[in-house]
Amino acid sequence: MRFVKIDTEGQTNLASRHQIRSIPTVILFKRGKRASS
Image (tube, rainbow, N blue to C red; front, side):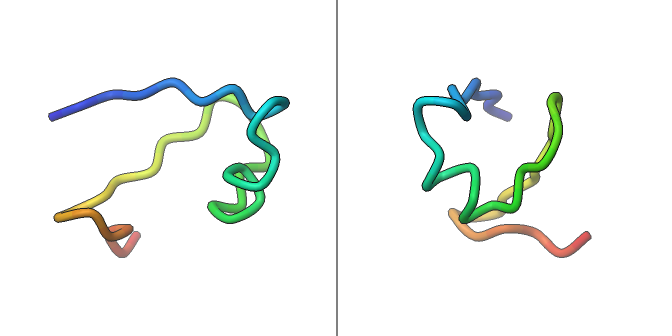
């Protein structure tokens, strides 16, 4: 398992792509693709 921290103010495109609207946000990925919730 890997945890990463993203600077959502500096990486606005990444935050938008993953629909991050609040902090903290946890998103699970499986084999590089977003896992279904």
